[in-house]
Image 1 (tube, rainbow, N blue to C red):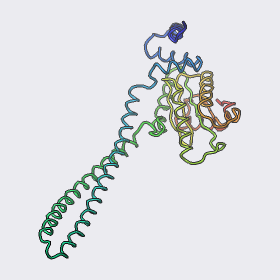
Image 2: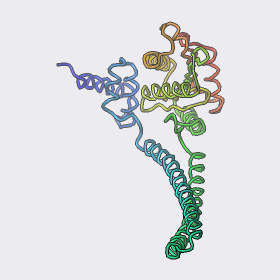
Image 3: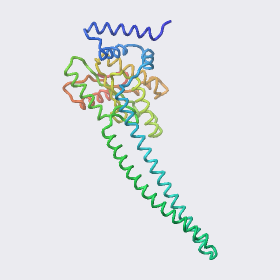
Image 4: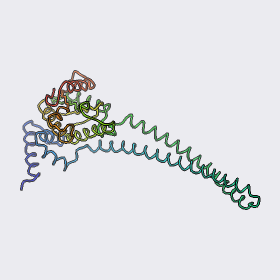
Amino acid sequence: MHTIKNDLDTLVDEIIKELKKNDLPPIPENFRFYFDKLLETKNDDFRQKISSISPRFDENLHNEFEYERSLNHGAKAVKLILKQGSSVYKNTTLLKKIIQNKKDSVIANKNQETLLEVTASVENVLDKFLVSLEKQSTIIKELYGTAASSIKNAKRTSLYNASLGVFNKKYFITLLEKERESCINSSYESALMAVSLVIETIEIENKKAHANLIRELAKTLSNALRRSDSIAYYGDGVFSILLRHTSDEHAEIAAERFHRLISKSILLEPDSTQKNQNILMGIVQIDSCLNAEEILEQSIDSMLSSSSTNISE
């Protein structure tokens, strides 16, 4: 019976042949690179099976993502604490007013001295409680200010876009610059791809629907990446994908695969022909003569001057 193990065994044999052919040692880094490179040539079904049984993200980056997510959750929790504290304080103040009204009623009755004493005693306890609550409220506000400052600093130095789960543009430029330097110091090539949807041709009811569409595109692209690739949100609905160790030919193969997956997972128009026209892609090779930001802009220009049926390089 044919299983995925048979396909994997065949793939491993192909990897070893490539390593021997290029006189490279079978160390994990080289093996991983050729694993991803040869996997790129396989069909989508096989790739999806591989993705289902192997981790795709680097563990350290995953930990960074989780750390930043926890900071965001912490900020929300602090806001809720502050909200609850405020609510308790308002309710207690209201209770004091009610007791004051009761006290006034008791004063109006000359024969209710005992009740008046009890009311005064309760009021005294409430006064002390309010003083304590005010102090606690001040402490909570100070803690919230500290947490808000920490969150702000974390966002300023964060690696990823929290809502999309991909790298942010600032950090991606750092990655791209490092890759450019690696290309200069070695003989291999890398490519940069820009991907977007022609939102103007799609009927979007509101901003929420638009945001959901961008998130769906982020998810689709992220799931289609090789472990060696990196993805970031450039802005304005545009995603940038760094394809390491990728020639023009293999970049086009990757673009065709991304296009197929987007077409299948994101229904833009009922008519498949029209749907394909709503997917824009642009590919450029990383040029040692340009800096990271210029390479990014070049890929955007390439994308804008092309359509999904005419992938530009």
